[in-house]
Length: 146
Image (cartoon, rainbow, N blue to C red; front, top):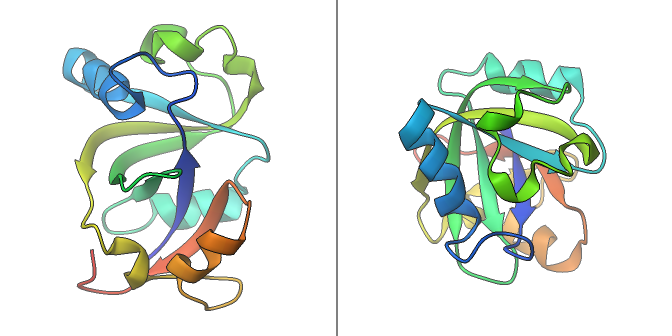
């Protein structure tokens, strides 16, 4: 399965943290928009994710052990309605270039990175993520390694 891995930090998140802030809106509305700063994800990659059997992205907490699968049912470049975006980044929402409509977030196994390969190099995500400053990676997740 091809998807993307995104790094995140709690730098601007409320005290409860990024994941909990997103889960609060999922509990309230049934979904939340998760924004990606920087370069937009290409339409080709978006289509590959959405067309997969179980569309999801991997969220990696920078500098910490948190790994999460965010299950998505839509991805877009346009800024969504702000009430479905966590409050802490509504005012800067125009800076985000890709938006993921997340319907569920689950903790991923602690060794999930070792089961993912970066598509461009075919190297393990564990290895590449340590030496790269890239905020996201296009990855292949091995069958049964989720």
